[in-house]
Amino acid sequence: MFRVKRLQREEIREQFAKEGVILLPSFLQEKEVRSLRQVAEELLRRSEPPLESEAAFLGEARQPYLGTIRRLRQIYGRNPRIDAWMRSEAIRPLLREILGSDPVLVTAHHNSLMTKMPHSSTETRWHRDRRYWSYKDDRLLSVWLALGEERVENGVLEFIPGSHRQEFPPEAFDEGPYFREDYPPNRPWIEKKIRFDLEPGDVVLFHCGVLHRAGPNRTETPKLSLVHTYRAADNLPLSGSRSAEYPEIPL
Image (spheres, helix red, strand yellow):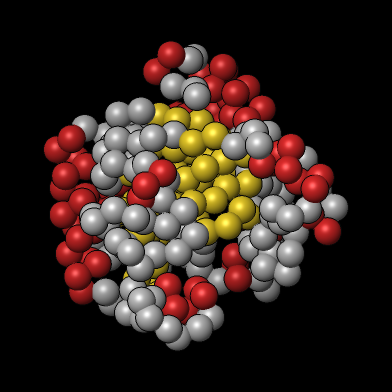
């Protein structure tokens, strides 16, 4: 587990390059987190599209997943407090250090209020985000902000450190495309998994190629998190791809 406050910028860059994930504990103060949580709860109450339901994610309409929100998409532009967080000046020096360039806020991917609702959320299996994205290279990182406690019991993120540097054969993934747990050569990688038990205001940065997953929420309280992505300024989306369809915000 790597805590940024104990590291210098060069160490942060080297650690991120090696592991593909890093924790920024207590990055936001309690008052700021509480304000964002209130906004998130109100947006969730409205549940205005675009959004993704658990039933749509599963591809089947059955209880208890009907009507359960998995995430609100395109969250940037819905509220000025969230917009300010996604453009935060406090994190920019760290982003520049890791990306090696000025950061650009991506709105095509992530850009979501993520939820794990009590007793009606589902597992998110091992995957890499870059399999769904189309850019010149892999200088992309995501910022995950916990708006409440995140533990195994309510679906905390887990990561396989170093997996962003590994080229896996096609058979390591299913048609999902998810990293197969039934494929024997994958098991040593999965056994390396780590997690950060998060407190409100904690932030996790993770590389677009690092394998990650999350379980369902088995508690009585909704788990809410904000996630968005940055690219290096010269790491352009590929023309004609979904990655190029949405506006971007240079910082």
